[in-house]
Length: 458
Image (tube, rainbow, N blue to C red; front, side, top):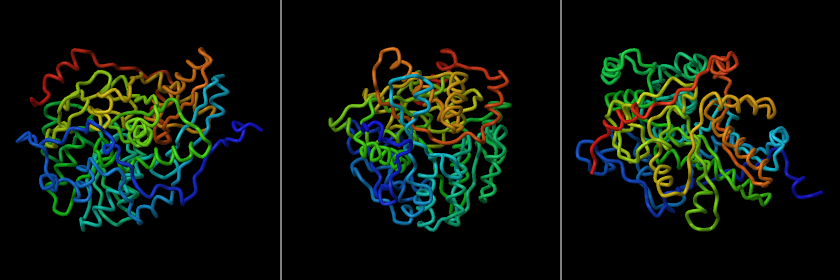
């Protein structure tokens, strides 16, 4: 029997092999991500300036560009054991359906009630809030996976959770909303009339369906004006990519067991949490000159931060109350179309990933919504998992890469991230199945209008 035949459908690690440290890719970056800036002074944000918004320990992680490995607290390790390690799956059935010589693997993060990878960071941020003696946390959520994960983590630790959910997702995904409420969170459609920022955005954009940038603004306002609360974020920030490194560390450990080296690593990209987590150990090897990998970010054509955005300092939120981050951005005023990949409807990209992309260590592509759902449906029919719309962007790219191998005869090894399941996204699947789904791509004029409002930073 060949070594190839011995590779199982699912490669599991043992509980003892769950990472005990997070990997901080910034430590190996020659060009570090640019610092967050105070929007008033345009100076780098200090620890004390960030304290009204974030938990103390999380600020330390956010600002740490030099420590390669950071210990995972034992209580968090114990929580991880409820749903980790997650499986690395060989997509034999998909390979057969595509008739490709490519070998396809995916890291599946949907084996928990939140339905996605978001729980990896939610439990960490809730843990540090509890350790600091806080009453609760506020946050935003797009498709709802992050809000669900944070509500679960908050309930587990006994702290309050206030979620501002992008209005279009609040309306499209009522069951996701009810899961959050079941775990004790309050859920408010954003932009709301409950905050100053929400009222301002509604006045400026009547009838808006909202965006992650809007919801962030509201959550930050409530956190800073409510005693005993702090704001937590499910993507973009350095600390979040740090926590999500458990995805890539597990994936690499599973591949190493069988001597497998991926040629291509693919992840969907909205703010960057899944992509950054999946690629972290592979990117570390690439940065250190130990191995080379082709790393691909896949984003929606309706919100193309990498492929059509500007690498510039911008506000992280539409209300312009957060620090400035240097990232690939479409402009904080950009309101993306109401597509069904709610978790990817963010105007900017992680500063870490933005710097790596700018320096040429990774590439990016954008794909249209109907093409994404075609790939999702094909994957579901042969692999037996109904994928989240966000994850399906990576599936689309992985299928396309495998079909190229069919044309050329190359036997590439492809790894992609399956961030979660799509069982709360049935409105989207219904639209696709009924032929009512459309593709919207912003015009150059629309993007230029948004770029014109970028803050002036020398």
